[in-house]
Each structure stands twice: as C-alpha cells, then as structure tokens.
Image (tube, rainbow, N blue to C red; front, side):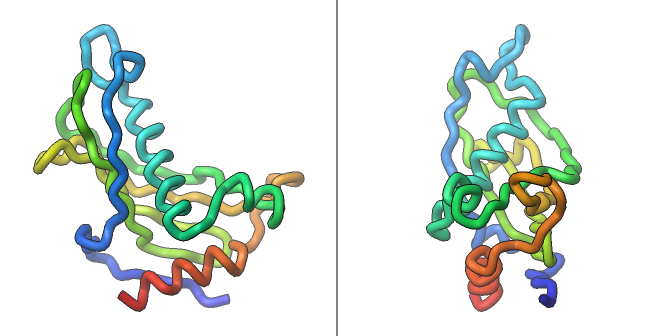
Amino acid sequence: MPAIALGPDHNWQHAHHWPVRVYYEDTDAGGVVFYANYLKFMERGRTEWLRTLSIGQQNLALTQGVVFVVSQLDMQYMIPARLDDALTIETLVTYAGRASINFAQRIRREHDTIAQGNIRVGCVDVNSMKATALPVIVRDQISTLTKR
C-alpha cells in the first residue's frame, strides 16, 4: 500500500476547524491553560476531523478491531490561552503511511497562534496493541483529501 503525502507546506485553508472554549478545569493556578491540556484539545480536533469523514473511533474499534495511539509529537507553545478564551483547533493530515497518520495541528485565538505541533498516530490492533494497517475506509477518505 503506497504512502499518501499531502505536501510539505501546510495549506491551513483546507484544515478542519473545531471550536474549543477554555474552562476553569483547563487552567492552572496562574489562570492559564495547563500545557498538557493543549494536547487534549488537539486530540478532540483529530477525533472531530475523523467524524467529518463519517469515521467514529468507537466504531473502528468494534468493527475493524483497531485504535489509534499517539506515537510521536513535537509541540511548540507560543502564547498562553486563558479562562473563557474561544479557541479554534486546526487539523491537517500531512502524511499517511501503511499504519500511521501524521497531523499538523495548531491552536488559534482569533488571529494568534497559541500552540502548534506535529503529531503521529499509529494504528494498532485493539487486542495485541501491535501496529497494523490503516483500515481501507480511513485510507480511502484520506486519499480524497489529496484530490483537493
């Protein structure tokens, strides 16, 4: 199965956008978003991106016997987000291999980039937790993105 590369330059115009509001539970004692919570926001962005492709993670686990796990990430934090901020999580697929997908993601508040990262998720068998090929439905949906 050949890899799908979507190009090195991130065309954020084609990104999936997911709104997130910062709640009290997301902040630390200083009133800013705790660093690990940005990763939770990004997880929501990737999950909602999958939903727009009519792919649910629970359904993949039950029908295909696979789940996704984060295998690598590179994060950069620029400016803090604070309580009640309205954020947008932007998600792009940058590469899809036999058993993994690379995402570029950024968290924005209006025109400011709060944080950004590159995340690789691996597809693993739900029982053995060993790498396995992406389901055909996932690869087919990602392939349609390259035709934009």
